[in-house]
Length: 147
Image (cartoon, rainbow, N blue to C red):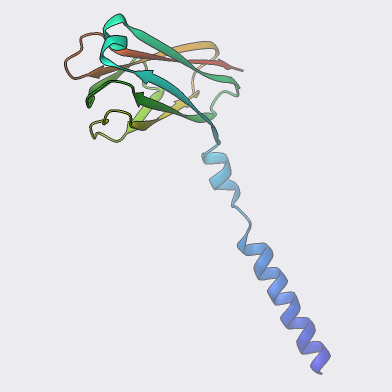
C-alpha cells in the first residue's frame, strides 16, 4: 500500500509541475510579441539643433505580429534635457517613456511597439520627439517588412 501512495503522490507532483509551467494557447496567440536589443542615440543641444535621426529596424515580421524595441536616449549635453512631447505618424506605433528630465550624462529608455495588423509590405513609420528649447525634433524611424 505504501508503494501505491508513493506512486500517486509522485504522479500528482509531476502533473502539477507540468501544468503549472504551461502557457495557455490564448495568451500566446493574443500577444505574439518579440523583444529585441537596445539601441543608443546620443543627443545634445547642438546635435538637436543640427537635426538628428535614427532608424529602428524591426526586420521581417508576420502580419498581425507585435514587436517591441527599446531605444536609449543618452544626454551628451552639459545640462538637463526634457522631452516635451512626441508625435507618431501612425496608430500602429506606440511609445512609452519616463517623463522625467534627463540629467547631463544620464539616459532614459524609450519603449517602441509596432503592431503590424493591417499592414503589408515594406513599412516606414516616423516618431518625432520634441525637446524643451529646441525646434528641431529627434526623428526616429521604424522600418519593417510585413509578410
